Length: 132
Length: 107
Image 1 (cartoon, rainbow over the protein chains, first blue to last red):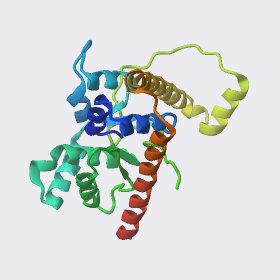
Image 2 (image 1 turned 90 degrees about the vertical axis):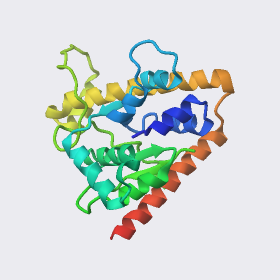
Image 3 (image 1 turned 180 degrees about the horizontal axis):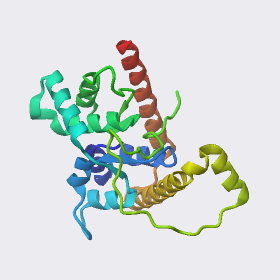
Image 4 (image 1 turned 90 degrees about the horizontal axis):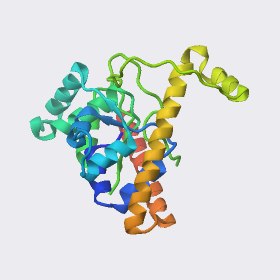
C-alpha cells in the first residue's frame, strides 16, 4: 500500500521513490486508501504530476467504511494524538482490515506509532517502509 | 531477508475490509494455453479462476504504468542505476527487520 507521500516524492523526481516503485513491479498488487486517491485524483486531463502517476500506476483503491472509521478513531484515542493524525490513522486502519502486509511511506514514525496501537486481535503484521 | 510483496497479492474479499467497488463484471471470451489453464485451476480451483485472472491483469496494467512512469523519469533524469535499486532493496530489508522486532515485542 502506498501513502500520499510516495506520490509527492515520485512526482518530484525523487530517485529512491522511483526505484522502489520499479522494484514493486510483479511483487504484488499496488493499493491505496480512498483518501489518498482523493488527494491526487483530479478528473480527466490534468498536468499535475501526482495525478498522472495515479493514472499510470492504477493502484487498487480501498474504500473507507464504518469499520475503518471506527478503528481509526480508536487508534487516535489510544495514541492520544486526536485529529492530528486522522489521515494516517485511516491508512493504518484500512491496511489492517484488508490484511495489507506493507505500507510504503515518506514518514514512517507516525504510522509505526499507530500500528503499535492496533488491538492484539487485529492484523498488525504490516511492514512500514521508509521510502526516503 | 526476503523482498516481500508490496501488499498481499490479492484483492480483499467483501467483508470487514474495504474491497474495491466495481461496476458489474463483463464477460469476455478468451483463449488460454492448456498448460496455463491447468496450472491456474490447480492453483486456485475452478471457483477462483476469474479472480485470479482479474488480479493478474490488474498487476500487468500496474506494471506497464510503472514502466511508463520510470521511462518518463529517466528521460529527464537519467537512468536508474544498480545503486538506486540497491538502496530500494535495503529499505525493504530494513522494514522487514523493523517489523520482525515489532512483532517480537508484541509477543
